[in-house]
Length: 87
Image (cartoon, rainbow, N blue to C red; front, side, top):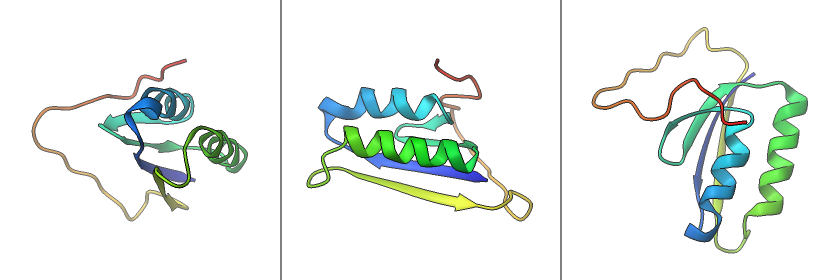
């Protein structure tokens, strides 16, 4: 599946959330990552993020797609991130 993750978390947890997400997805914007991921890895990512964030103060959004066949992405301006993964 293809997943887009967006997060809005307290500054104390930003680096840890980004590092966790980058193990599974590509960083494309501040607080936005995307990429192909297996169902098992997606479940692991959600579980790891749930352990990091504060549910009373932070939020994480997941957009999931079965395929990217009917989607497209355009960007203008500078490119942030890329297709390199942080391991």
